Structure formats: structure tokens, C-alpha cells
Image 1 (cartoon, rainbow, N blue to C red):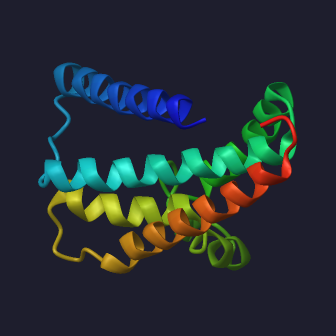
Image 2 (tube, one colour):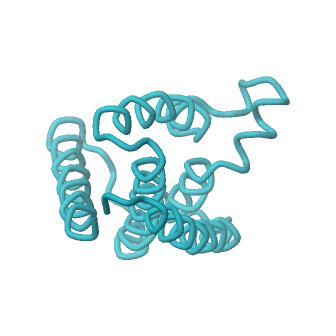
Length: 149
């Protein structure tokens, strides 16, 4: 699993770099104010989601069912992250749920680093670190339960 996760991490980072290059060349997208910090937080976020995917894979059992479950979970996490729509447009109940999701915390950590805003909240990065530790422990326990791993 770790080799697969490492390959996915590299592919996601390359995909982000290529996407940004296209946005920069085609639409003059502004570069991040703190590129190394953006890279670090983005990598942390990717690793959190990769480990959460490993947890799903450990429970789902087969690659096909893992893909289905991850697809079912992906879109609500994406929409509630604030990356596409501001969560202030959602009902209060969804806003209360969104602030506890890792995608929202990742967006909260990345936005000020990208724009150079001084309102950076280290609490979001701490949340991601804690989520990573919890997810790694959970993944190890779930994978130990499986007989085929």
C-alpha cells in the first residue's frame, strides 16, 4: 500500500503543477504568495486523504467497491470544502458539518498561503496533522484485521 500511496502522491502533485501551469499560461493565474508553504500544506492534505482512502480500502474489501465508496464520499467532501462554493451559501447545519471535514480545513490552510493574506490559522494545519495521525492509526488497525493483506 505504501508504494501505491507514494505513486499517487507524486501523480497528484504533478497533476496540480500541470494544472497550475495551464492556468498560468492560459489565464494568467497568480502564483502563490508562499509557494513552499503551499506545497507543504498541499502535500499534507494529499497524504491525509490518501490514508483515509486506505481506511476505506481496508473496510470495503475489493478495489471496485473501494472506488464506489470513495466516489460516493468525494463529491460531498468537495462541495463542503469551500473549494467550489463558499460554505456561507449553505444552510447552517451543513456549515456546522463542513468545518469538521478535512477538505474545509485544507482550504482554510491553503487560501491565506496562496493569497498572502495575514489571517493564516495554524489551527487548520494542526487539525490536518491530528487527522493524519488518527487516520494512520485507524488504517493500521483496519489492515491488521484483514486476512488477505
